[in-house]
Length: 472
Image (cartoon, rainbow, N blue to C red; front, side, top):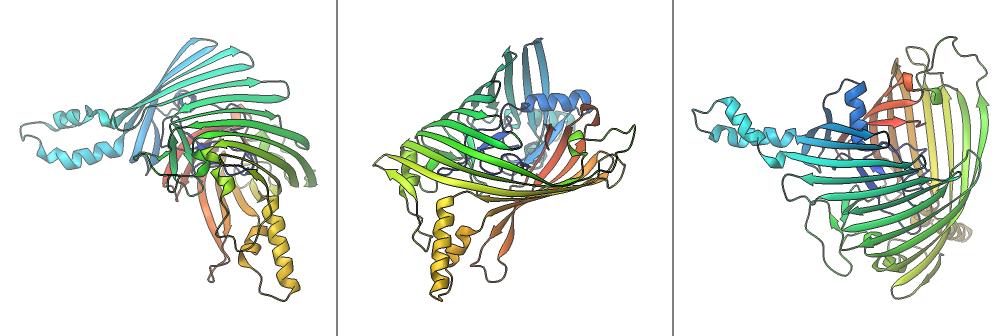
């Protein structure tokens, strides 16, 4: 998708933030469904200004490029950091829109007085405030376990709404607590469309996940105001046409419990190269493993956003089962979910060439009720020698995500992530590639497990560079 969202980031059930270059903050939240996915991202991560500061200081990149069709093209960013104290770090991030600048030169450059020099013409265009955007970000380490981040974005064109965000993160011994408020909040739906919610606030408490065992997740989300598409006029109507129901004003609370089991199928016993540090310590053990997750979730909503639980899926050609209690402006929904994944890796990522090949396949079953409904309908059709209902077959098919990574040379590797969509109504080809993302990774060997990633999404037409730490 528009973020190189690693398949291991929660298995599709945990609402991991998506990276996007259309805002200076560099993040967008997923539009949730009822009742999956759940919550916010998995704990605090390195903020976008700190990432750019790292590129400038340690990777000799004075300007960091990015590109987005939705944000009107190619831009470059630079950050100024102000480390006031060991516990307080502030940044001033500036963005210059190169594509707008070039377009302005082409459109208006020839209209300048003939006696004006080309330096004067360029200088005049550089004074155009609409080419610039700034972000002020302050991160305060209140205690070793408490972090507060406050950011404000402003755009020179005076048409884009300024963005404000506050995030508080607390690390308990076995839990992570995150409280986030954003106005407006940026969301992205399954079709790749960005939405602005005038005000959104979320509280998320999650147990620290383990390789195997039980975990739970609780979250509360409050939306206020009428959603609108990114950089467009507010929509109107009851409900607004095309607006995802879960973005409408209202309160939603979710709680989930899951159990995860890992199985080690094969692990290499071959010794590693002596006196040679792997490019990434997390990717230095050849093995084949599988894992499975089984869980249950309950969601309660109050307000306009509860309409999603009251609308029957008209595309569904069979009667479905669901655990749902609803009233005029409220609803409670319960469901089960499951996933199965397979990971295979060859190579220790120590040699200079082709010493890492990694394949990951993930299958999500986000709704147990739809799966049971589809399986029941399919069994009924087969028992009565009837043609299987295509909607029933699609209901039992999982959501599939595939990922492949291959070392090219030294610390550089190529990676592609993609979903696989199933459309049985398409007679020519039932399988299609869904939202592929291509990336080049550069492993920062001196940090043990860190990488600089440059990724491109053909569907969103977005390009971005970012840092990942301890990311498998």
